[in-house]
Image 1 (cartoon, rainbow, N blue to C red):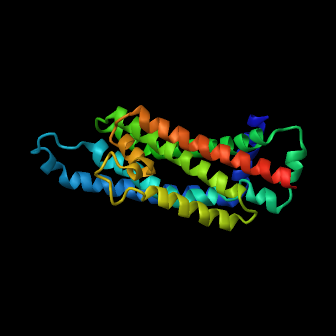
Image 2: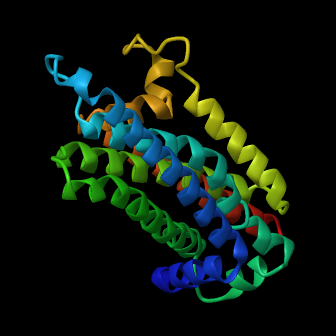
Image 3: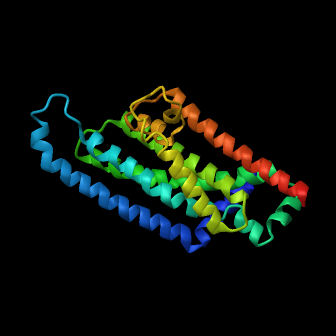
Length: 248
């Protein structure tokens, strides 16, 4: 049943122009950033040859691309998640879905999995940009894999938080604004203590764990952080819907 709901959610995203428009906007902006980074790399390539341990094309083109993608998608993900549950509430279809022989956990997991399919597609399209450089240069594939994994994990975290905020209201716009505010807060949480790795705020910041993966460091603590973050917000969304069903 979870896969059935996920497929339905994934198809419904592409039936509306919103997903197509957002996908096109993201690709255009990132393509412009990608080609700009290549121009900068060519302009400083002679200087790099005289440097010891100089950064390569992966560090100067691929890594910034994933970084910029995360910032852009921090602003766009709330638009994707705002309708997941709040739209169902507003159109009164959530009560019909709950009356079906399916649990709330399956509903929430199905909707989240459907969004993950879209995120996986988007991550793959973004990763193809730096991989296309393999035809003319040598790439650090381990660092590209780490960056792509980091991007997928942080977008999955964005989506989980957005799913929970969407379960709190029947107004998609309020859900979008609330999600953006929460994600921005968690992103900038360590802005004053970025150099202090022992700081609690630094550990709770989304950007701290994402930047580690961007550097090619596959630390299990960073991956565990994202998995715990995702699980926590999914559980909160399930609890919220269960409470609403009992109250109704």
